[in-house]
Length: 128
Image (tube, rainbow, N blue to C red; front, side, top):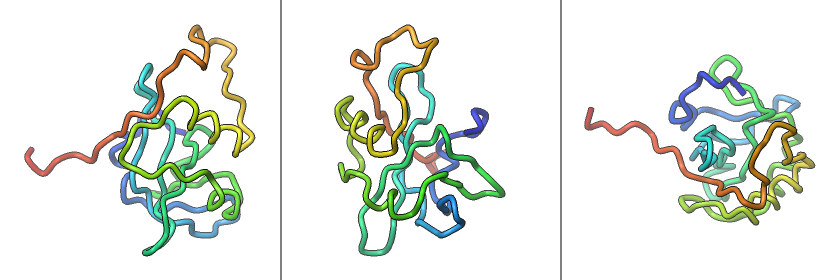
């Protein structure tokens, strides 16, 4: 994903799957605790539905919408951890496995098991 995009600006944007089917709206963005890089988005999948976690790394911001390169059914079947809480390393591993993503980066000096993941990016406050 574009690294120059403020993760707080993703909140409220529409999200679509690889085929252009609407998934929902970005509810929250989770940052890697070690790097501060946006890593996951929680997508509100419907009025009475839960949030589905999606990886931001292979996703793209296109014309103001989040394009996620996975099928809608896979996204809706993602593990449900609730939102508003810190994602544990175990929960993140479950998500990586669900999406079939490799979590080991060749240049990563910190082994994945020692990383702390999932800080939430909050939208800008109206106090400014």
